[in-house]
Amino acid sequence: MNTYTFFNVKEYFDPIPKIDRWLNPFEQLVSDEIDQNPISIFVTKRALEQLNKQRNAIYIEMQLMYSCVLKKRTIFHRHPGFEFQSLGDNINVCFRSVQAASCAPEEFAKHYPEKREFEPKRFPKKLFVDYKNKSWEGCFEL
Image (cartoon, rainbow, N blue to C red):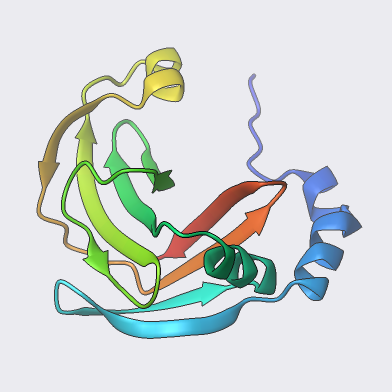
């Protein structure tokens, strides 16, 4: 009999991420709307410092990918490939619901192949942005 667990005990008890979050809490930067749906953007101090340092705006894509599983992705783009909405200084965001072209676990994990985009039924309410180890990190809540 195969048993599967989605609860990683090591991650739960690891104090480093908890200490990092305590030292670098999220603060609300802006509250606005995307496609007439309210969203709040929260950033850490180090993310805000990096936003103020850099000359170019960041483009954040929140993606809800439907495949054999539902996957939430936060992607930071250097150049916009589609339409983004400006929310505050240097932050541009968009939200897309896409269907995956493949359900094969290896293909899905490596390439996230997109088949088509469709109108979302749920929209993100909160976006969390951090700048850590010289790269952008983010997640969102529905």
